[in-house]
Amino acid sequence: MNILKNFSVPNLCDAGAKPLNGIKPILENQKLVFGEAITVKISYNDWGTLIKTISFAKNKFIVAEVVGEGKYETAVWGGLASLNAKIKGVRGVVIDGCVRDVEDIKALKFPVFAKNFCPNAGKPLNLGEINVAVNCCGVIVEPGDIIVGDCNGVVVIKKESLPEIIENAKNIKEKERKIRERILRGQDLRDVLNLE
Image 1: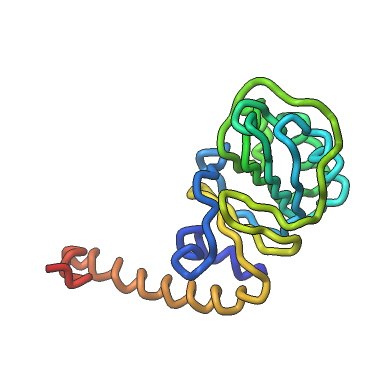
Image 2 (image 1 turned 135 degrees about the horizontal axis):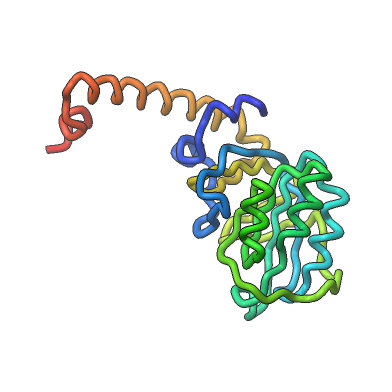
């Protein structure tokens, strides 16, 4: 899986990985991070289940489906959760919903990807489900799927598809290298791509 560090999220998306459209990094210059998914399904006002998940998520990527009408009006992740997750070795967090304490997350340089941010939080209800299939931005994410994120966004790769996607990404990267060389030699991209 370490070979993933040689690619960008756009490379992997072009190679067949599924994008989580609308999920953006909190850090504008987010470097590439990846890991296996540990999934969480919670209501929009329950951050307790996510906090509990940190204990099981060392070297993993937490992916949360947030459900309910208030999913874009209530934060389920923030600065203290990010601090705890970073110390416990969590690779990153994807929230199909809102986060808060953006300045704390940026100061920690902890990889958090979310739909949006807002200041108000829910409660530590701890009523959600851990390690179940979740629907994140219209993509079904299962425990153990590979999550890759960078400054461009996040993609999901099924484990069984990983070798094929890596091979595709290698070919795409090589093709782009050749195109870049031709542009640097003075050719127009339009001509390189044979666009009439």
